[in-house]
Amino acid sequence: MVIDFDSLETIKNSSTIGVEGIVVAEEPYVYDQEGGPSTPYIKLTLEITKVLSGDANLVGQTIIILESGGEITKEEL
Image 1 (cartoon, rainbow, N blue to C red):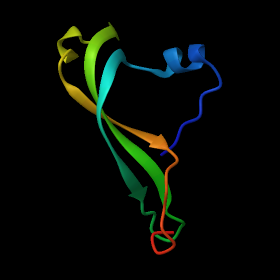
Image 2 (image 1 turned 90 degrees about the vertical axis):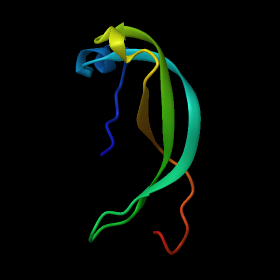
Image 3 (image 1 turned 180 degrees about the vertical axis):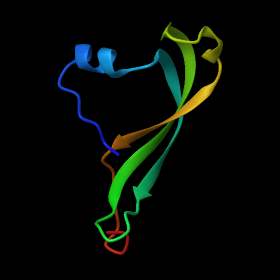
């Protein structure tokens, strides 16, 4: 579920779209993996303000991004 990139060039080469935007909401999110440990994330809602590459019709739409990290309770873990 998590992908680590070592450079901006690697991100660019691995992406199908490139956008700029404004985070309009954020909330904690816990990925509950059956049989394994739960993993905390921050769920970001990004409003797209500019398309750098890809479908220009995405401007004004929102996408969800999961950013690793965040808090997790003992019960969730």
